[in-house]
Image (tube, rainbow, N blue to C red; front, top):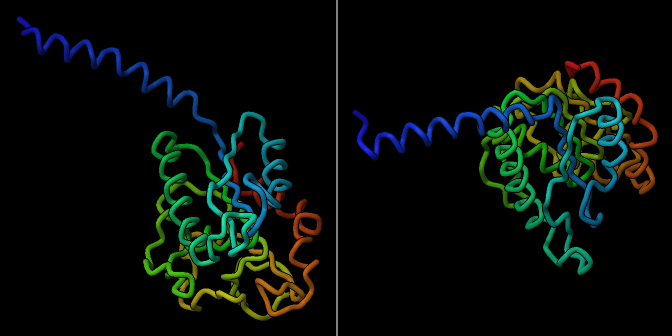
Length: 231
């Protein structure tokens, strides 16, 4: 016969199983993470175009914005220095991705980041550290999860000659990733858009270049993402 404690354990397990099943059944097939640029208001910032295009192409898919300061010392974003913001962003990406992936391990993941939002995605996906911004860990902290497509625009970590580069830039960004850090198995899943006029991902001097990727490459980025996802 069951003791009272054993009976309670059996009942608890019986009731827990349907809850877990229900949680798994509610998981989307596709989930998008969007990380905004420096000084953009909380939300998706300039990644909104890409995020919304993916959500429209795949009804039932979901998205969430990376919650971090996105600051460069301005009072309008809380006064955090750029380095402090990058450090907080790296932690936020790791936390939000791991939290979602633990609940929905089979969901296909997409990451979209612009400018500083691309940088924190690059730091966490490719690893290698970002010492100029106080990121000393070289671990690729989200590389184990089920990412299927990654879109970076104006990434300060940009390095010329990358197999996944799209655009006219021939010089690296102000926080260029060491050439030895190649983003491993994810190379074929990334598109990193950087044009030569961009002062952040390259050595340009045209501020407009940094803000035109959504318009110039929106359709191409969506086509790339669609080529990597299973509907």
